[in-house]
Image (cartoon, rainbow, N blue to C red; front, side, top):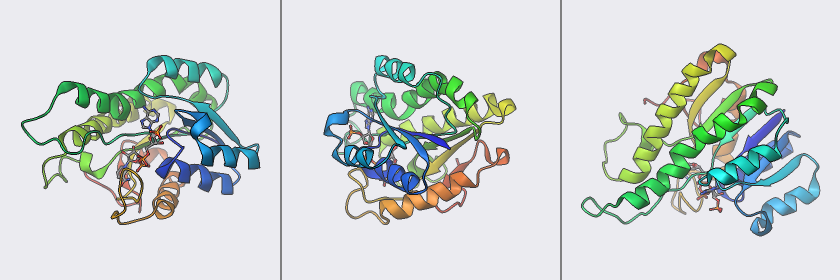
Length: 229
Ligand code: NDP
């Protein structure tokens, strides 16, 4: 199986790489700067199953360069993991468009641009699975706390992208899902988060492994339970 994962130099993305390598899968792992991605470089030295490729998902030129490097390679599963939270301390009354757009570029626009560009690779793959790491805070029904305008809206809009992809690619048997990784101890989740990356990724990989075409267009927690849109 060949798996493409974005944002793999730390956090959840790095754990996906470690987990899939243990399972002897072939991985194309992306990061913004290979030379500073110490953990990935160490892993690359231990196996021929890991290909590291640079990709800044917020930059369309970088997406073009990346996709030309992987032209002709089949991809069975695409895990769109790279994401940003954006500024944390802005309160209602102080928002500006630039900071909002920067988060949208990474969390919402890039996933669609990348999917469009790698569709040929995905068509060559067998599994046709598209797993987008979203967040429960993007669920409108689940929003009881308010705030987090920038991050929430970026993931809510990502969820719509996923839903449309699930419909547009259904005839080709693609399976597109949104995944919530849990509240995870990473740079983004912080030290007080509820679970570690191993627990989150083990759960999400089980969800991904069990996906069938009837699951397309759904939103799942890392433990396999459904999340309302
Ligand atoms: P981290 O902040 O630990 O890691 C984020 C990753 O995304 C890094 O590898 C980072 O690379 C990469 N990234 C950010 N911007 C870009 C970019 N422009 N181009 C390429 N890569 C980029 O976060 P997590 O591991 O916690 O998050 C992974 C995913 O899970 C995200 O989509 C996040 O929204 C989601 N999530 C996380 C939760 C949590 O509790 N941790 C909860 C819900 C969802 P670099 O080092 O170069 O910045």
